[in-house]
Length: 380
Image (tube, rainbow, N blue to C red; front, top):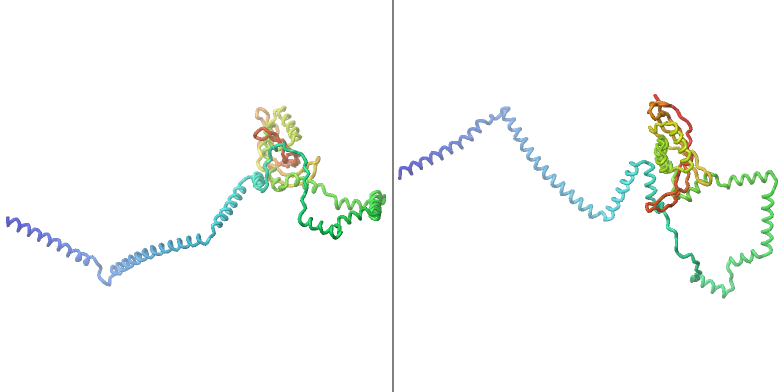
């Protein structure tokens, strides 16, 4: 037994000696691989070591700076939220909502945007049927109570015998001198109005021109009475929006579609007659509108007791008429014409039907006249 134990002890000593030899060999290998001092390799190794140390230092500094910046930002946010009143958030939200709404309207058609803005005005009431009042119509006499001031004045007047200024003026009107003055003034006015003097007639004409309301002013006054929120620019935008609908239905010969637009009965009859003539001749007009100019205001006037707004514009259309076989009988497929129109829209009551089936009337701008002023070829 002693022999195997001794052999095991020798093996352990041998293994320990081998490990010690390996550890002692590593520094020797490192020292053999290191460059000699003063050489280029040593300088490169020193520079690489310095770069690694600087990079490590910069990384540590960057982490510390980032954490300090995050802490400062959090402190600033908390401090700002503590200083800003709660209503500021709501006010800012209202401003953002207002800008968002304006952007939405700016992206819409100007005519549709005008309608939306009118609906957003305070006090706007959507047109619709009005229920008839079925309540009482009896008149009741109500005794008005005197105020404290009236009671005090009546008491003072009774004690002192004082009368009001109105009572004095009423007594003055009943006097003979006042009646004579009134008769003299009436006589002078009658002589002025019935005078045959050319000078008097000239002065009267000047007075009529100075104080008589012009037709345009009368038209604007009537429009304001019927539509207090009237805006001429919004009206022109709405008319420009409706032009493609009206002209498209007219050129296609679709009378039912034309009836859905804001067109008066007189214009529907005239346009319907022209469309019937096209159908009788089996003529089909090209309904495409390539371009439309801006709407220009011409005048505002009264016509048959209704306000009328006249505007003008031009459209680029294809002058091409085909028969029922599709053959071109007038114009050409590439004959582009600039067509100049004169439109007159009138503010008058129009019949509508509510969703519940009740009928009602509402003031609506409708096409009253359409005049084709001329055409000019713009084909290349």
